[in-house]
Length: 225
Image: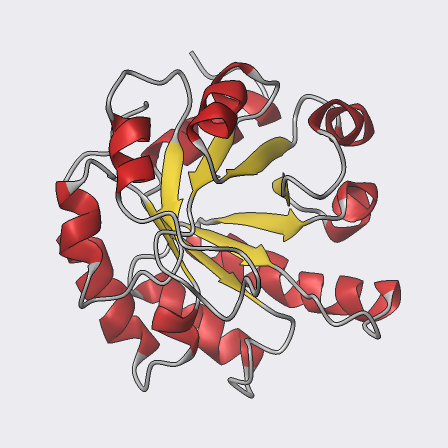
């Protein structure tokens, strides 16, 4: 039974299958809102604002967050802010995501409270197991393939996906890292039912059609664990 904001967000997260991460400019797309709308029409369930430019100040980040929030509201999607639990409230984000080298989970949770979704990156079997019992709402597993969005982070291949899928998990989890329409089938075969994409959509000539193709390649029902 959904009883509050946090419960409602977690219910939507359990149903989510396609998750888009991009920067404040749509990673060069030009018209950010038009790009987000196209991706969301194609079936994206979650949009994350991840801006890694150190010159990008808080005011500019919050300005971009307004476009993400408006797009998410227009399409019934969730909006997640990367690595800034301190700005979650100001950005009106549904959730925040922290990596292994970012703020500790306990500290992030203390900042955002219980109603805000909290996600965690994992890169090893040990980190997968830790995330499954930590105070987070979902975790990402990867990078499956090497990707320029994570320089210096070695690819883990599909073995870590198989590990995550090898036992029931109490939380939703997403495969991430270099996933596109040419390899999503192998990711699904390894046991993933949810994926995170970046360049598959930001580099697409038709993000709506690409999102629809990615969504169509995923199982009809996503496992909770």
